[in-house]
Length: 185
Image 1 (tube, rainbow, N blue to C red):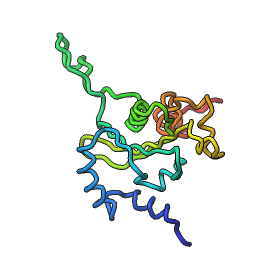
Image 2: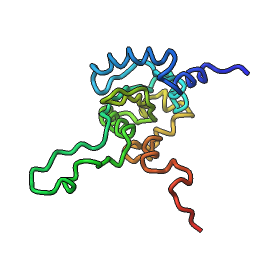
Image 3: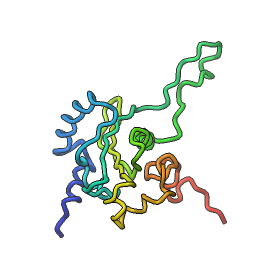
Image 4: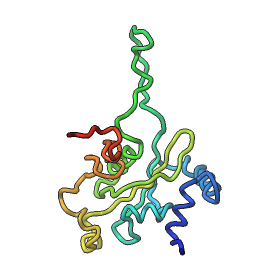
């Protein structure tokens, strides 16, 4: 059976620490560390994931590379008198995952566009990098495309802030089929 180009790209990204992706990722990380937190890129790095999320190489679509810090919630230390256990600094985590946070920050940066989805492209010791797919709902090409013009309707405004993207649904716990959820009889 003949494999498609997208399946070859997907296989290479399943283990990014091996093969040609490893060398490319190493060089890219050096550049990305010194860039801004949000950089608009010309084309997606992982074409298979972008196409699976609905990306098309046409007008009205944009790709933004987002950089977010890794780790749990960092809180300032308390100066008042408490025993160390009750300070409430360590082991406090945010309710959202970092991918959802990066989508929200990109949406805030580009207020005229809607977030379609995002995917992981790399991480180092301090940061995680995601590519976020944006769609302009007011663009005539998007309005005339029957596969994506659903995003032009008013009920899909600001969908990232309501947790309606894939990463948002995951952080809300809507993606684990049966795991952790009790069955109602």
